[in-house]
Image 1 (cartoon, each protein chain N blue to C red):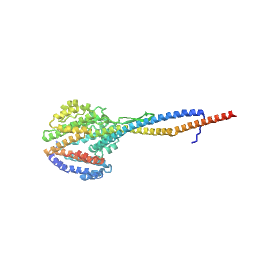
Image 2 (cartoon, helix red, strand yellow):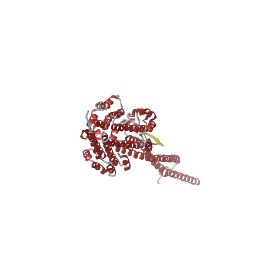
Image 3 (cartoon, rainbow over the protein chains, first blue to last red):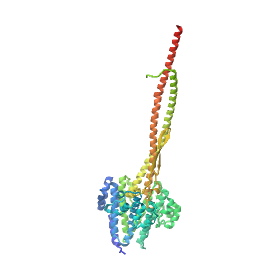
Image 4 (cartoon, rainbow over the protein chains, first blue to last red):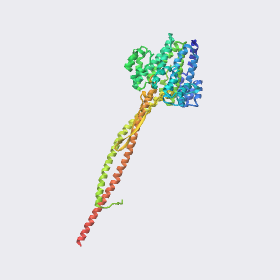
Length: 348
Length: 205
């Protein structure tokens, strides 16, 4: 078993975290004009500037910034992942692997609707440095959904996809991928230490939040009858043993289970749900739950400074930096108001 | 005006029948014009509401897709869009309003349910789903507004044409026929008087 290099990696992660764009830097971008904003994003890091320059020949406007940001994130994740070993690497892989699952879904979608590989490369999986070459290869070599599944059988989720019936729909494959990801995430983080427990709590919190949002959305779009197929096991607020009462009670059943938990602010959530009903959108709930996750992450980083937690915290904050920059750039270019943008840049 | 008609009794009878027929036609056209106008006004009120609704729906859909692009990213939005294999279809039929043929637009699969979007539910993004829903609503409203607008346009054209026909009948055709009728009557009376005078003179001889 590889020896863990926890102290070195956590120190590097903290240093890198300090170099991330601050909230004030990101908020300053909101006041800039759409013409200036792409240039100003490049001024935040030299590496971002390099990525922008590399994509400038292919994309423009919001697409350029987004492609550069995504590329930057992938490079950064690979770089920090390569610094890790042993337990830290194992923990971190839970958070980096989710992008593989996302790419696998893109492959399945493209094959399902027979989208040209060139279009996939341009619109969905930009391939500078051949970073997405394996995924594009899957698209090119597959004619049917099943071909794509067979071609991806050596991937970590290959067995799960292969186990589904041949006539499964795209949605069934996608749901199987998501279920598999969360099952792997829950089972990969093993151990009894307090740092491991915090990480397990974080995964459980993500699963709970996903379940809460899915139940709310199912209620909004008339999908309640399929709750038994979409509830993800592994959460703590909505444990597996409560699924039966949620399936029968639906949204009200979920709220009842949440109300019994001392770790969940049911009153605050009730206010958020009121906002959701008034705006006919789940946006307030998504934002509220995301804030909870960030608060948890920032706590865990300080409580266990020499563990895998600062690394996971750094990765999450890097993802947040990229998301916030994309939000500001895309939002400004589309003409979203400053208030809307400010409301979605969450303090961490 | 030079009248090129024969001042005969049979012509007068024919003319009287024509005037009666024309006046009936005039009354019917006037009723049609008023009916079309009434239909137009009630549809116009509906259309104004539909346009307001359409604008509000468009704004909401635009905000939601912008938010989805900003929060989830354009790559994720496009990745979700390619999964959708549903093709909305619009069928244009005809219906009749007071003899005016107007389009009757029926859409199918305009607003796709979650199932028909193809993507899995577990990993779906509420932002993208809400944007997709809003655009489904928008397409439905566009189709309704398009049908109303085309109907209003056809009605307006028909009102204009009917108005021109009514005016032509009222200010040209009927007065001319009546003038011709008056002329024949006058001519016949004159011929009668001439005949009487001629007979009197013949008797006196």
